[in-house]
Length: 122
Image 1: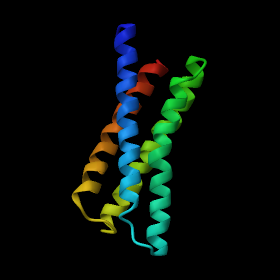
Image 2: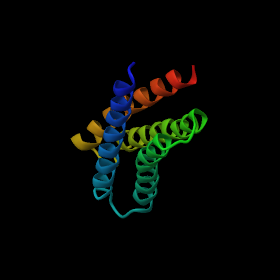
Image 3: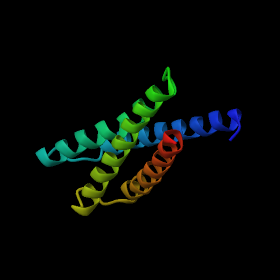
C-alpha cells in the first residue's frame, strides 16, 4: 500500500470511529433511568468513545510500538462496545433500528481494527 493510500485508510477508520462514538452518545439519551440502564449506558458510552480516543492516540504515536499499543487498546474497546450492544439487544433494554445498526457497525469496526493490528504486527 502506497504511503498516501495508507494515510487515507487510517483517516477513513478514524472518521468511522468518530461517527460511531457520536452515534453511541446519541443512543445514550434513549436509556431509561433505572440502575441497570444507567450502568449499561455508562459502560457502552465509555467503550464506544474510548475506541475513537485510543485510535486518535495511535495516529499520534511516536513509534510503531506505540501505534501498535494504542491500536490494541482501540481493538479491545471496540470489542467491548460490541459486547455491550449485544447484551442490550439480547435483554431488549433498547429494541430499535438504531441499536441494530450500531451493533452491525461495531462488528465491522472490530474487524477493521483487528485486521489493521494484524498488518502492523507482522
